[in-house]
Image (tube, rainbow, N blue to C red; front, side, top):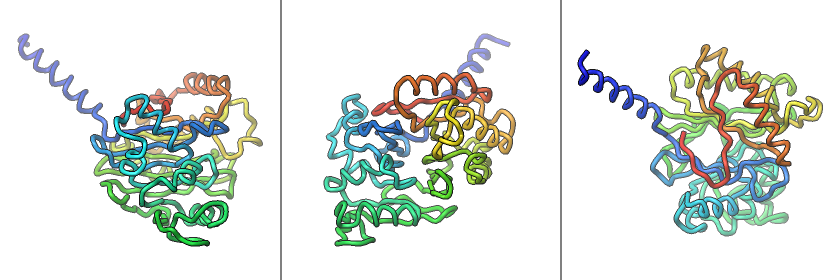
Length: 316
């Protein structure tokens, strides 16, 4: 083989590698933790690459996260412009305050857009938050005077819904978060590419549920076809946390057990180097450090573990 041919093959292989690594989605975490840090609670902006058409997956922290992103030069516009123009809508996995407080507090300063959630989640927000008493009703449903800034869009499980003012769609799947309390997973798709975001969830074995197993069945074909770019999934406690006090959350061991179920469906080796974004780590910092250590030690599937940082952009 001539030197020219060898160089040609080398550059071809490099080009293939670069093509394979090209991101399809832009992700900006506005909040990455669970627990008591009100300035850094679950909220992830996701947009098709090279656009500012973001959907916000959960909304525990909004304003503080945008300010952190601006400080990191992730965004080079004002906080108001990101809030009003870049964020096209919200997908809310469940109505616990650490997943909706940013949406509620920032609603007076926000622009008109759609809030996507299941019927139970929307009913909880309408009855307990946007009810004209605990907070003004900025929605177009529910009690009290309706300001109609937000359109409350009900998601039915398994049905694809267009995300307004973007090219993306969302499909909701049920999760158990201290069964029978309902949480939600969102499959976000843009063309042939997808990401999966899970709200708070306990393992099937503890929740006496098959919700995660059914979710893995639904997304396994996308993993096989390399259309699934990453999975956002929570790990709230270290392995030492007893199952009786998990409160509908995962540990590193439970996460790996669930991911093995997914690999069994998709095929051996399909999760190697696949991106798993770890969400909802609960303070204190010593506990977070232990969770990360246990995840890395137990990573027999060789997934690519990503620990997102507030305000720092990454691609999927």
